[in-house]
Amino acid sequence: MNRKTLALPAAIGLLVPVLAACGATGGSAADDAIVVGTTEQFVLTKDNPAPFDPALAYEMASWNVLRNTFQTLMALPRSGSEPVPEAATKCGFSDRRNEQYRCTLREGLKFSNDNLLTAEDVKFSVERTLGIEDPNGPVSLISNIDRIETLGDLEVVFHLKKPDATFPYKLATPAAAIVDSQSYKRRALRDGFEVSGSGPYTLETKEKDGSVQSLVFTRNRNYQGQLKLRNDKVELRILQDSTAMEKALKAGEIDLMTRSMSPEQIARLAKGEDKDIELVEMPGQEIRYLVFDTEHPVAGRKAVRRAVAQIVDRQELARDVYARSAQPLYSMIPSSVDAHVNSFFNRYGEPDADAARRTLASAGVETPVKLELTYTTDHYGPATAMEFETLQKQLNRTGLFDVTIKGVPWKTFRPSQTEGEYAVYGMGWFPDFPDPDNFTAPFLSEDNFLNSPYDNKEIHSQLIPETRQQAERTGATKSFEEIQDIVAEDVPLLPLWQGKQYVAARNTVTGVEWALNSSSVLQLWELGRTVG
Image 1: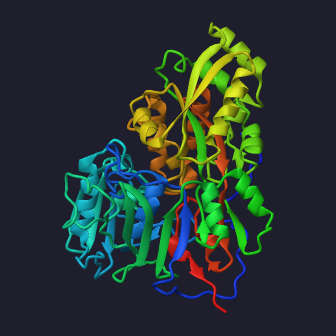
Image 2 (image 1 turned 180 degrees about the vertical axis):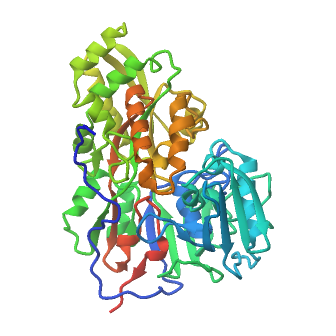
């Protein structure tokens, strides 16, 4: 295949460096919680009344809470990308078409409230999410389930509407979290922050006026699964911004900080001037992209979208906005995921204002083209505003566009975006699971989570189903390549960059190199303390 492909490094599983330590204890004292700082906010709103209900939660921050408090039948392993049994002892397809998936549960499973966990709870949990069908929730991940049957207390069988080789990955997400059928209502969300799960930790929430101040995770004495806990208690402390988080780390008020650090902080901490703090870099699959309303009178014109694609300078974004803590991305599938192709670079090459001018002229589009780009001010980190200011400058300095930008708080942005109120807007994506399907189907299927009007029948009726029939995932590569090329042709989405992951920690903390996996799952159970 004759393609021009850029060499974009970073492979799943590479971790650098491991923190030095005198040794590690298997668990800290119960009153000596490891304190993790974050700027992620959890707030009760009309549109998000139940942030920790698996039927509604569908963003990285909430999912990290769920992954530490609920079990799923399958889970991602400590390293690697193939799901392994978690609440189950074994799972697998029982037919050749990948339409029937059978799991056997561990014996003696209990929720943290001592209620028994059986196959009926699994059936109830999945059917509940399907029945509630919240448009902002994760229901699209499991909507291919036709029916569920139980065989005694320990066996559950999922019958799928269509073949789907990625189903084990979906069972490893909080969309399939197992809730206690005696504590959750079948047709209603569990409002507030309370959880009843069987995961590695129980949860205590400290809140004020509907806003979380901290989350305390305590070892669940009833937990049975494949995870090995290296601590007894972790506190996730909510801080106002990245500056306050760094200050708390240096003062010893927190032991570790994760999202969201600014590029300037990452560069500063990387110098290693504070001998008590070390920065760990890990490969990540976070992506950032623009979404176009393909029915908008301006953004709906393909020539306008292509012209934007011909002008945007990803190198400038990665270098000047993100201080090389991100790398340019030329496909919705990251470079570290199998089947990635640099489709946008192959089609449009380096930024070229003259090419964009010809594109607009040939379509009879009058210039300057007026567009508004909308972004969320408080969800993807402190550099987002500068990123959109840079995009605005890139487009306007060509004379072809008259772009304005608008920042909106996430609690307003997300429902307005779902209702189609923005012509062009910025979104981020942390994968639900590390398979190319999860960087294509959520955006391009008929029931896509963006609620996008873009409709390409070849993609959602032919190519995506073809990829899901391939149990050996390399067999789906050709179809995924075609999907990426079509997206570059139509530009309903414009990939911008792929992020790296960083964790900064005091050198008394161990397991930091495992704190985040490649899908940005916060693995609190990996953290411990040095001894000696």
